[in-house]
Image (cartoon, rainbow, N blue to C red; front, side, top):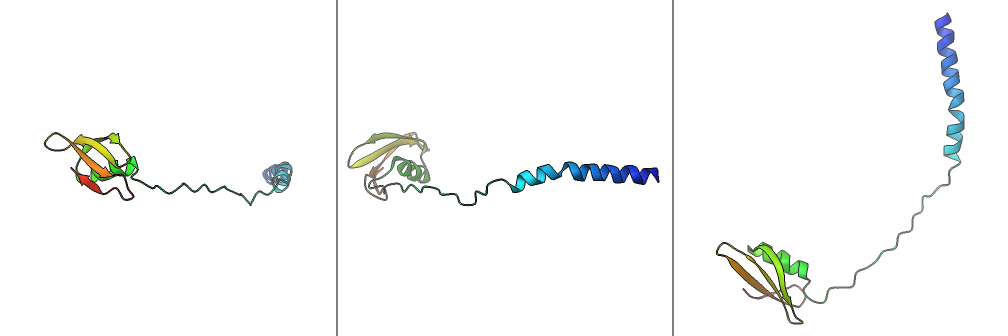
Length: 100
């Protein structure tokens, strides 16, 4: 019987000590509505350097770097199976290949 009383008193002590914590959790302010600003990037009018690098890597160049950027073209240089090579892309939307 003494074990039952000890366990019951321990359970009652734990239940009574947890009441203040439960009340503070319910009194917390509710922040359900979060407003996030959406920043729209301006549209890319020309060939972005990252897109030129991605296309050059897809074409087989390794260690690709931007070599030159002008208003008309984007030149990237890298290595292929035979050695150093470079690709030239037109500086318009879509980065079409001008010559390799």
